[in-house]
Length: 73
Image (cartoon, rainbow, N blue to C red; front, side, top):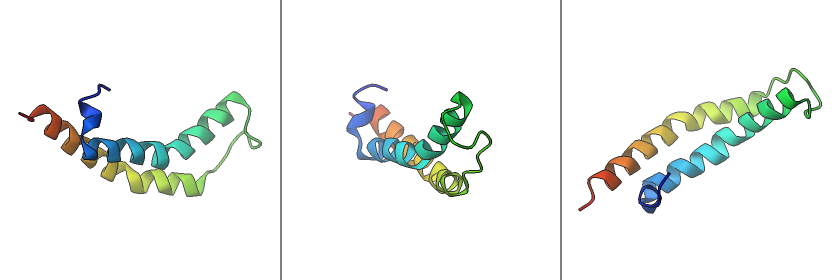
């Protein structure tokens, strides 16, 4: 990502939604794959629902931010 993309509030919102919404699920999956999670076959229900609820808002905010930075004059 370049600096102009992150200058938009929409883009910053998308990045935060991805980090805070998808991060816990990805962290659990990666830790389980590496063998560092207590359960080798986890069922992370809460982080999965959080990732599901933040997927489309993050995508929409990212597209709006991308469009605003591309067509900025």
